[in-house]
Image (cartoon, rainbow, N blue to C red; front, side, top):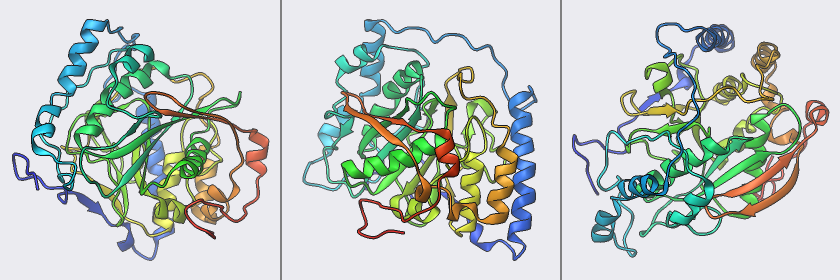
Length: 378
């Protein structure tokens, strides 16, 4: 087992057990969610003290020389891997040459330039580590019209993940429907379609604009709960905004994702789906697992809110309904309606194009979940 400076181990994580809440769980949850939603929307719309204000400027372009230097820096760990890791041995539990401050570059290179770098990938953005690993991870990115941010993400995350010796594949679930953006449908449909392509132990749902800053953020799942990886954002001065925040980057086993019935499909536009996911976790009495605040640090790539992703004016009503009526039992994977428009195995990722009709989504009735990993899942 490889140890880092300071004696950090992969078991040194914080657990917040929501199974110990009182009998007045639903009432407390309702009040907490309402206060939490008020706080986050106030913080996103006002320059209050713990939110950094800045002008959003276009990301600078990388030339070939600058890209080569960054690439070489990010893959410096390969020298140690080649010396210390054997294909016949288990992968080390901690990254070799681990850093507590991973450099983050908010600079843009074209996908063609990135593809020419290689990134040690198989077609479709698949990586097989040079050692034996226990988990296979699918990383699902809900996406529409964010090519610049995707290129920044790919340059940062591929070497970051490979340093951890994770067997993984990146899936970009692209909304091609001319409808209001629906993150929940993209994550749910991505979960189902990815499972048809390969067997994965762990599913990580990842916003395209979030970049981890610490090698000790392990991109693996924990069978004892839901891992919330991105909660200390540079944008928020590395503070946890509220205890029930579960968004940005979340790692879930496929068994727990089925148990939660996935994300809600009813949140069109910005806001609410992550808070609804917390309600599902609470109502199913699962734990939320977080690394310490000093470790779980992320940079949010600067950007304006996307066109077609306006604030969801229905979010409060939907949250009340979720809390008071157990909406997760009839909304999610079991009433998912979408069409696959195409699947492409590209050099750096697999792209899954998804379309849907809003009225069909809103009116869909629940039925039996047909999931590839189970012969008869409900």
